[in-house]
Image (cartoon, rainbow, N blue to C red; front, top):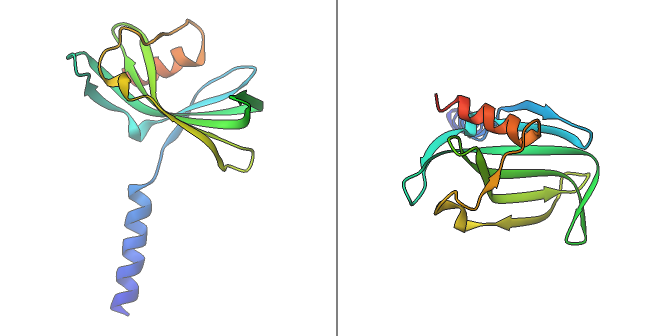
Length: 138
């Protein structure tokens, strides 16, 4: 009985450690965009720039295409430079309609400087992400 209780407790603890808190941040004609609030953290780039990081998720209304591959959803680990209003994606995974991974991409150069990151465009999902993540910095 003690072993069964220990296994059940370990299972619950593992599920809690892996839990995510996806919160809707934006929607447009192509899909819905979310941020995992529990993943938001402060970080510092190699050059000393303070940044924030978070996991994001996009759920598309129609199939999207990249490199000849179709996908319906994407999860990305992103860096946000709140002061410069820029972001970059360090890691991304794209998923088919059944939730299976179609492809992944890694961009380790992201950690050095935000100089070449993408500038946030007003009234877009990336701006909503930036506002949400940077609100945690204050």
